[in-house]
Length: 298
Image (cartoon, one colour):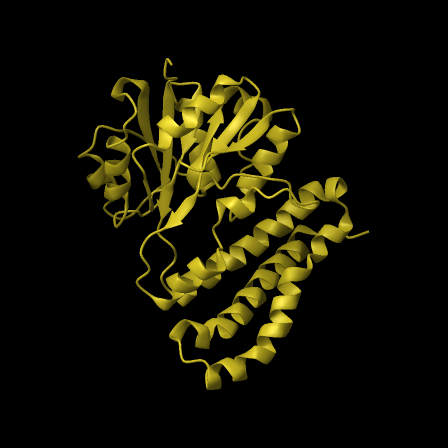
């Protein structure tokens, strides 16, 4: 089979700690070297990211507007090829990443395809918690639910340029989270399919601190509010009141004393506490963003 040409777009902001291993994994792909390019979009980094990138055969584009959406849009619009792969600067791809996904695009109605997001070896209890809770799960994102159709997490996703052009790419109003779901839904509603390739693995480095994890979860809540505002007529007003965060907030509160007294495992002792804090931050982000956006429920 003749392998299609693919542009890989990597947005980066202050990624000096991880960008080198990301680029090295991309350069080690088993895909033909003349069939892909690496486009790194520097989102106004203030650390040593630019100096590190000088050491690699990649195309670097500046983007001074903050936000991954702006960086990704700059990247795919400047890319040379008709398939656009996205990953993040804190990720490492497996060698067969592109070679596993590329065959899916023989069907012209496949708009996007992605694979699993595996976790790097955890170093802290927070990373263990994120892995246990499956917070960043491509499999979960691809489930077809009434108020959340399948979508691809952009850290492991390849899109057809034609589909991106028809929907005008990422909506840069999504400055914190939710942009990947919004993009996939708009592509699917045009008649394209979104596919999953289990062999195309990307390894993701999770947040290692409590503050970083809670900020990320709060951002997910804010993204959820923006998705509701944009698509509430499609999914109905009840979609705002998804029960899981409310249930988790309630039940974890009563589990905390029991787990602290009776659980011996470090992670199991603190899980209800982290569940409570996570649910609170998600709902805080969702409710405060809804108020700021002037969301109307009726």
